[in-house]
Image 1 (cartoon, rainbow, N blue to C red):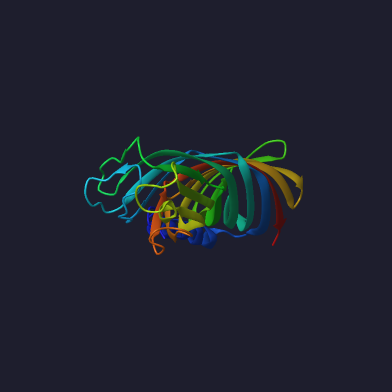
Image 2 (cartoon, rainbow, N blue to C red; image 1 turned 120 degrees about the vertical axis):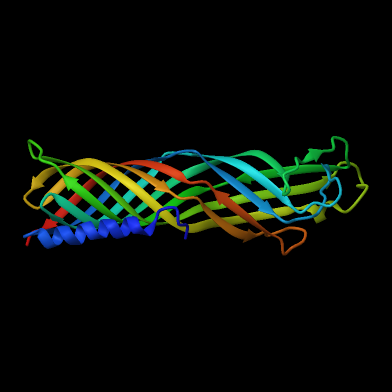
Length: 278
């Protein structure tokens, strides 16, 4: 798990909750569920391996230690789902919440270099034809967070509120696909057989990282113990990375590491809360 958010923040928030509950005379439990849409900002992918093979069409000035590649990742609008259980007292609320965010991803190749940072140069005239395909599926975020809210006086049955929270998230990029195939332009390549250079990878890459969120919303009283509202949320998810192996590669035991920069998500959900009064 990454450590971008210090655990002492969580300890401080928990202390506020315990102190407030000690001072409160009455509290009400509730359950909530929300469904809506989310938007994730663009983020980046950087990967590397320690493959020392000199591939056709590459200018290899002596031995090298591996390759590093880069992609820009753009996300589509996706679904946001939230479930929560909490307690309200004296215009404060504390809850434990589960959230799922799902965004389709478009992957755009931006560059490749040797692992030592030297640029990869290509030979224009060679005996091999190279075809490359790369794509990604969805960015999935499953989070478990502790959230605090402050309700404010409203009018006409409305209760506006602000909130914040921290927690852990399972961040996963599904169906990461890379395929590179080599074929001879002429009947016989002047070198190794083309199939020895082929690569294939298909994987779901994920990691557990920290997440932080801010909230703003308003609830409307449908009944004495039932509220319906809109909640706007901003979530920060830390950078995540994963190590995976190829389905095809030379050598066959070759692994690669891909890292994905932190992401920011905006979501707007319709939320229903059911209260249980003490």
